[in-house]
Image (cartoon, rainbow, N blue to C red; front, side):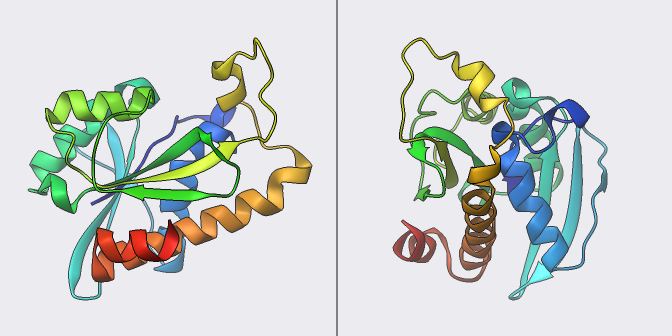
Amino acid sequence: MIVGLGNVGRDYEDTRHNVGFMVVDLVASKTKKTFRAGKGEYFFSEMRHAGEDVVLLKPTTFMNNSGIAVKDAVERFAVDPADLLVVYDDFNIPLGKLRLRKGGSDGGHNGVYSVIYHLNDDCFPRLRCGIGTAEVVPGRDMADFVLSKFEAAENADMEKMVADAADAVFVFINSGIQAAMNRFN
C-alpha cells in the first residue's frame, strides 16, 4: 500500500502539505488508474505492478487524522505495515530532496504521528519529500508555510521532486525499501 498524505479540498490543492497526494496521483496517472471513494475515509486505487497487488491511498480525514483512514485501509486490505509506504512533505529537508526510511519516529509531522498512533507501530517505510527552503525565517509560522503554495521559482524543483518520488515508489514496489533508499537517499 502506498499512502500519500495531504488535505482534501480546493483550498489545499498544490500546497506544500499535499506533496504526498501529488506523488500518489502521479503514480496513478503513470499506471492509468483513477481513484474512487473507499468504504472508509479515503480515496483508493488498485493496481498490479511487478507481480504485486498495490493499493494507492489518499486519506480524506485531513492531515492530522490520517492514521484513522490508514488503519482502516490497512485492516480492510490486509496489508502488513512493512509493506506500507507513507509519502509526505517534510519542511526540515530542502526543497527537491528525498529521504526514505524503514521506520522510526514521526519527526514532528502530525500526519505521521497519527499513522503511528493508530497503527500502534512505527515500523513502516516512509518517503519524505523536502519542501523546505534554504532560508529559515525567525518566527515563521510553520502551519502557514506548509499550507502555502509553491512559489513560481520553486515549481520546477517541486515537479522534479514529485517525479523522482513517484520513481522511488516504483522501486519500492519492485525491489523494496532498501533498494529505494540506496537509489534515492
